[in-house]
Amino acid sequence: EADIYQTPRYLVIGTGKKITLECSQTMGHDKMYWYQQDPGMELHLIHYSYGVNSTEKGDLSSESTVSRIRTEHFPLTLESARPSHTSQYLCASTGDEYEKLFFGSGTQLSVL
Amino acid sequence: SQQGEEDPQALSIQEGENATMNCSYKTSINNLQWYRQNSGRGLVHLILIRSNEREKHSGRLRVTLDTSKKSSSLLITASRAADTASYFCATDEDSNYQLIWGAGTKLIIKP
Image 1: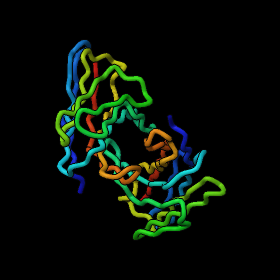
Image 2: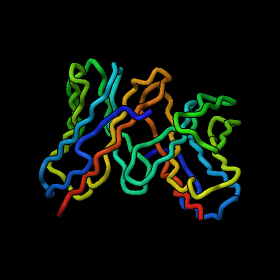
Image 3: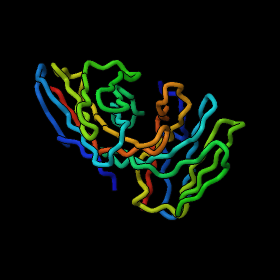
């Protein structure tokens, strides 16, 4: 069982709202990732971190930002949500380079 | 960037039958992984095969890797309804140390 948690599980908000998706892991992993996934489609990397105070943008252009102030916590923030942000957001972590990722259950975001 | 390709995109079989899914990639790799995703959930790691391995087993799962063809297959034997899910392969072929994901195969097991 993976010790990585995402909240909220579902979120429905109006356009223009600021939101933060939470992700926490208790495994002491240095590497953490945020992926965006539309239904039935592949995963797109939007942000990653290799440790505290380290954050990078992924391949998919995103209007979100992330922070990594503590090893266990990697929140993702949308300053002004738009309908195009409607998607599932998956957080993952690993303790090894290239190795097994542990995923949270995801946040399903709907922006009206 | 998404460089992995999986086929078929969808597969529907009867419970008890075997299911085979394929994954192809483009450059050299150190390892290839398979993950399962139940609808609307996160992914769960199934198995990792290294570039110097040709076959690996885990319970009802068998993974093969052919580095000359840059392809891998995942075989699920004696399928069960609980195996209904999407299956993704991921490789470490990206030079920025990111996993490259396939588009997934949606597997449906009919009772």
